[in-house]
Each structure stands twice: as structure tokens, then as C-alpha cells.
Length: 118
Figure (cartoon, rainbow, N blue to C red):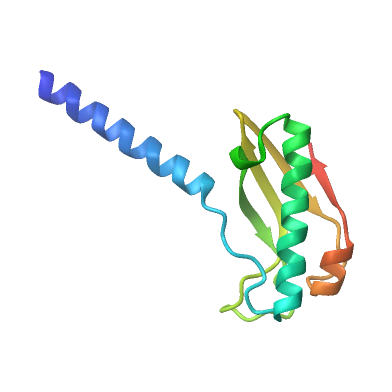
């Protein structure tokens, strides 16, 4: 009986750890762009994370995200596509944001804004 409980607890712990890991793994973005564009893309994501941190009233290092939808226009499969919809997690809250760009091209992506999806 004790071994069944222990096994069940270990399984619950394992699956909850996997779920947390998948939420906190921030995948690379814009890997096929030039160095300056990559730097700008990373800066833009950090600015968005800072905004989300303030809106959630949650420390920046507690914020993680998952990319729900990516732009696929004019990118190869090997490239990391630019995000179109991202969900942020932190301090027990979840917020989803959508990018309001016209295309997935880096220039437009950097200039466009993000709005919260309700």
C-alpha cells in the first residue's frame, strides 16, 4: 500500500515537473536573421516581458512564455519563426498577447505592437 502511494506521488511529481519545464522553456526566436536583427528581436521580447511583468505585478525573472502561433511567411522550416501569439505565465497568472504586424518580416515585426487577447 505504501509503495503504491509512493509510486503515485512520484508520478504526480514527475508530470507536474514536466508541465512546469515546458512552460518555462523560452524557445529561441529569429535565429535565421542577421546579428543586428536578432539583437533587436531579443530586445523587443525583453520589453514585452517587462510590460507583462508590470501588468501581472510579478518579478521579471518569474515570467516565462510559450509561443502559441508563429508567422510563417517567407521563412524556412529550419528558421525560428517570429511569434504572432504568445502566452506568458507568472505568479499564478496567465496572459496571452497577439502581435499586430502586417507580415512576418523582421522590420514590420519590430515596429508593430502587441495587444492582450481577452
